[in-house]
Length: 208
Ligand code: SF4
Image 1 (tube, protein in one colour):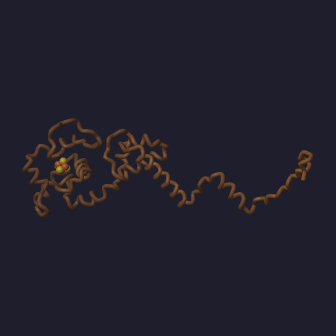
Image 2: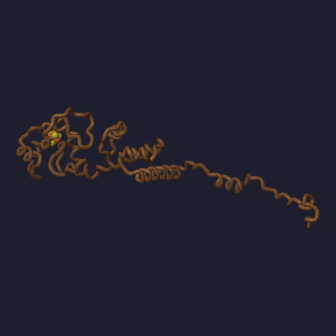
Image 3: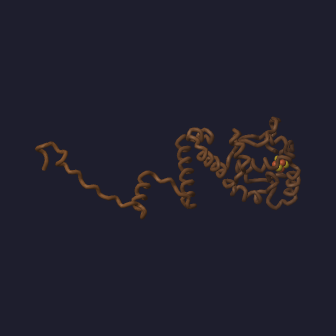
C-alpha cells in the first residue's frame, strides 16, 4: 500500500487486525507519495487518473487485502483494491452483514480476525450449541463476562423460538406432563377413595 512503507515483515496468509504486512507486496508500494495521491485520490471526474489506478490495482496481488483494509477501517475516500469510492459504497454499507467462513474458521484457530457483526453471530451461535461457558466466550470475543452471558442467553432464546415456529415439540416439565395426562380423554377417571373410618383405629375415648 502506498502510505505505510516502513517494514518488510513476511506476509501472512490471512490478514488480522492491524496487520499491514501486505502493503509491501502492493503494486503501488514505493510510489512517490505525490504521484500516488494524484493517482489513487483522483477527483470524481478525473477518468484518466481513475483508469490508471484501476490498471495498477488490476495487476496487484494483494487487491483483496487492500479492499478489506479499506472496508474494516472505514476508509471511504480514494481508490482501494481497484474500487472507487462510489463502487465501494455498497460494500461499506453491507459490511456488518458480510459472512466469510474462512475468517470465522481463522478466528476459531486463534487468529485475531476483525469479525463483522454476522461473523460474530456465527461464533456466538456456535458457542451456545457447543455449550461454551460465558467465560470462554468472553475471552474469545474480548467482552465482559456479563455481556457474554447475555449473548448466550439470546442465542438460547433464538433456538427456542426457532423450534417453536418449526413445530419441534419442546420437552415438557413435570407439572405440564401431569396437567396433560389429567386432561387427556384416555385418562382413567380417578375414583375417590372412601375416607378411612377413624373409629376403627382411633384410641378408645377419642372416637366420635
Ligand atoms: S490494490 Fe491498488 S491501491 Fe491497493 S495495494 Fe494494490 S495497487 Fe495499491
